[in-house]
Length: 478
Image (cartoon, rainbow, N blue to C red):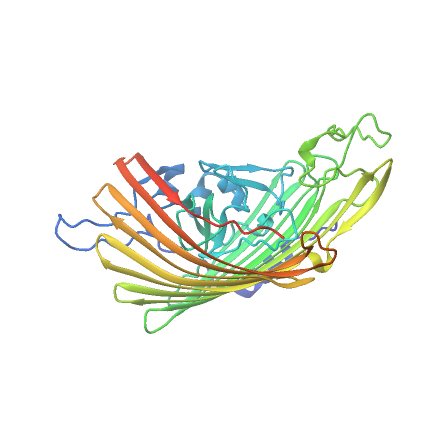
């Protein structure tokens, strides 16, 4: 695979900003999500957000509704470059992989369910898409940690803000620029090397002046891999601009792009003439390298090329004890896959991709959060998404209205109630009616009500029990 280095990016960044010295930023609060405590009498019941901060050196905080991972603190215990590296340290999440690299199709399980049955969100809006031509609903290779501030994990399908979240919600919050009185940025450069000629290089730059803040991120990674034909190479870029309005509101525009080439491991069986003793043995019946495909053999092309980008615009405006938030987003992705496989008694070259695996999602979310009482937080909202692939436009249109109410009954007992109304329009792939002879696209409509309820009780700062009853909807894949 062709190799390039991040050096050009780093040198360009440093030459542009060489005269500006990096400066330290004020430390963030221990819990960025915690609402400020109100100065009221001791008898007032408050929604105490932080329960436990004793895990991973204080990097992991547990609240009545979610688990929060502070990436700044988490990375002090060791460098991590991908979101799934963090998730595999969390209780209830399992990551199964066939490569040491950034595989777009890592199998990530949450409460025993794969990523078609839990939601991955970026700054609160969903990334999970059922139009993915790949074998998973999430391109995990596009989710690096260079621009991630924290990760929020919501257990079970208790959130009314999303459908298709039986396993829960993983919300990835990106970094923002630090506004100040000068143009001085904070620059970080990182380069690591490990076994199998694995290189990871990353540069970030954040800062701002006046009401404007920015954060830039660029990364490169490559490895020869462990198995035969197991190398990978990829790069990712992201940028975000935030502007503070005179009304204390915020406008933000962000863009995230990734590109990956990943080889499929091939059979390396001593019984075959193509056996190479310099690599580990992989027999023909080894199901660990299948990954929803037929096994690949040496002698042909066996790799995939994956591209993805995410464009977001957001507007947040506090209004007294309430807050309005608007999210508009667009996701695109494409994948070409080659595999040298056995067909009967001979080996054949296969390919999948082109327009059938060029996907796009556009959508928006509008939230209105009301913290009018010390022991209650109510959120109402509306969301809409349209999803398609190049060869089949306008497959899904999903719109929903919802409310979510968090009530602190006592200082230890909390109740989270929600309701989501879902309207789904599916313009399907072609199929035949029962007994029919002609395949055609069907236009289907469905309306659903999805109630949510979770009751949590904190016995002490280290122990909490909860019971949750939720109805959810699983969007079928295409």
